[in-house]
Image (cartoon, rainbow, N blue to C red; front, side, top):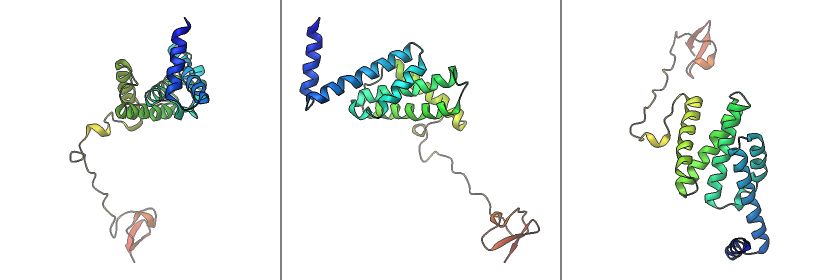
Length: 182
C-alpha cells in the first residue's frame, strides 16, 4: 500500500532540486485534482475558489497540468455563468480567456487534455466566440489571403452632413450641420 506512494515520492524527488520543491509540487497537484473533483461534482463555487487560490502558483505545475488547470478553470467559469449567474458576461469573459489559454497550451504541448475534453473545449470556445463576436470563426480557420478587407469609410466632403468637426475631414469644419472647407 505504501510502495506506490514511496515510489512516486522518490520519482518526484529525483526530478526536482530540493525536498521543499517536492512538497510544493505535490500540494499544487493535489489542489488541482481536488478542484477538478469539485467541478465534476457540480460544486462550481468551491472549484472556483480553489482554482483562484492555486492561480498564483500555476508556474509550479507542468505544462500538461497547466493545460488542465486552464481548461477546468475556464469550464468552471462557463458553468457558473449558466448555473448560478444567469449567463453572467463576466464569467463568460473569464471562461474565454482560460479556455483560449488551455487551447494554446494544448497545441504547444499536446497530452494535457483527453479527447473528450478537447472536443468540449472546441465546442465551448465556439459558443463563447459566437456570443462575443457574433461569429464562430477562429483565426486559424481563415487564411490571411482569404480574410475579407473592409473598405475604409468614405471621408465626408464639403456639404456632407455632420454633427461636429470631428465628422469632417481635417481641412473642414462643421458649420450649421454641414462640412465646410477652411
